[in-house]
Image 1 (cartoon, helix red, strand yellow):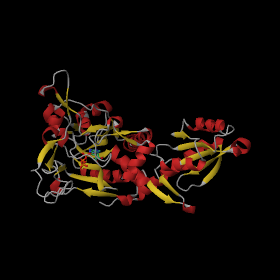
Image 2 (cartoon, helix red, strand yellow; image 1 turned 90 degrees about the vertical axis):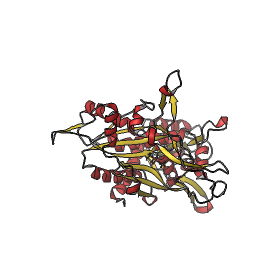
Image 3 (cartoon, helix red, strand yellow; image 1 turned 60 degrees about the vertical axis):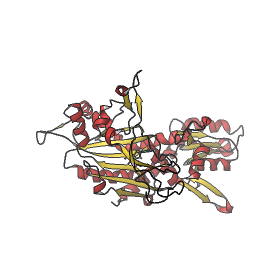
Image 4 (cartoon, helix red, strand yellow; image 1 turned 45 degrees about the horizontal axis):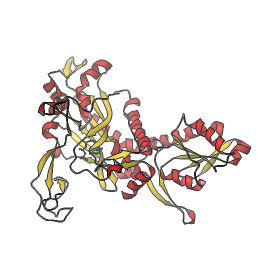
Amino acid sequence: MDTIVSLCKRRGFVFPAAEIYGGFANAFDYGPLGTEMRRNIRNAWWQSMVHGRDDVVGLEATVITNPKVWEASGHVTTFNDPMVDCKNCQARFRADHIDLKAPCPECGAVGQFTEPRLFNMMLRTYIGPVQDESSVAYLRPETAQGMFINFENVLTATRRKLPVGIAQIGRSFRNEITPGNFIFRTREFEQMEMEYFVKPGEHHAAYDYWRKERFRWYVRLGVRPERLRFMVHPQEALAHYSAGTTDVEYLYPIGWQEVEGIASRTDFDLKQHAAYSGRQLTYFDEESGQHIVPYCVEPAAGVDRTFLMLLCDAYDEETLEKNDTRVVLHLHPLVAPVTVAVLPLSRNEKLVPTARTVWDLLRPHFATQFDDAQSIGRRYRRQDEIGTPWCVTVDFETVEQDNAVTIRDRDSMQQERVPIEDLVAALRERFDAAVAQTNRAADAFEPQL
Ligand code: ATP
């Protein structure tokens, strides 16, 4: 993990937050490359969950909303993790994460843990000038409730029939007691969630469908399937309203950990909000002529954990011939922060103007970078290290002879000469081929439940 953290800082993926002030514990700012990559993750998710489908629509709800929402959802009373403190070193742990009979993982003291107590994880704030109990509001701990409270509005406005999904990407906040492991667990993070509403009885099939679909999505982004697995929550650990929860886990450097949860939530949330709001959150089923409360299946993923997974999965230190080595991120072109780098062979005045023209040609089509500093070999290495799938090199032949450039492939390091006039199409073709390849792999893959 340290290698990834230092690469992230050095190359501008992730910085410690407020570093000039000594930082801010467990908070991170995303730099230029990290920002691009997060946009790519969000776009890929949106494409797969909304634009690519005919049964899901989007939503952007507020971060701070009416506190009644969190009473109805159960977060005010039950969004608690049992915590213990070590009386010897004051370190705090989630009671379900450690063995309470074992020595303290921090200081080794035995038998020094306090009794577990519950801790509400919602971050509080106050609305308006007076700070008292009547002005308390919460930063949302999940985006999901936005979909339930807008269920009626969305269905009325879109005239949709079941099954219908409502999807949202946005920041969520949890006052995590044990944040850590870089961006894996932070207090401010970003979620990509979708509530998929179906007729009661159809939820079992929807749950199975979404579990597999969501697993496959990571394969579509190029993640190795053998580093992914399902973790089905045992029946006795489920909330009373839940008809099933399955996590998708990835083998991070810190071990198998959740990147996404898929939950079959029955009609619990709509019924709760109906009871608390006094509104009928029902759907008129033309087939049966009855008003029904839809059931809901929820795939809930994290942008930050997906980001960390993609970096860990892509990272490689390769030994090349002549005892040469390179660090390379084998990022899928869909998520790589830079798709194409344009590199003049040198800073020679004959080459740079043409290289800039080539760059101008590519910018409307791809995320690009221009680099003319240092030797061409070093620049290839720099692009390898940030996962750029293709480098386009402009050399003397380009300007003196053939008006063609070289496309160098990151993974194979093979080079191919392409006329400038065909360059956009040639890169597009490579991009599409990479997408088609991982789509085929994902479609052919049968995730094991
Ligand atoms: P965990 O058990 O790890 O605390 P969770 O089961 O509480 O996670 P969910 O409520 O299912 O998480 O949230 C859905 C997704 O949101 C998670 O799979 C994860 O990707 C992301 N997520 C949740 N909490 C955090 C956090 N503190 N930091 C980063 N991402 C988070």
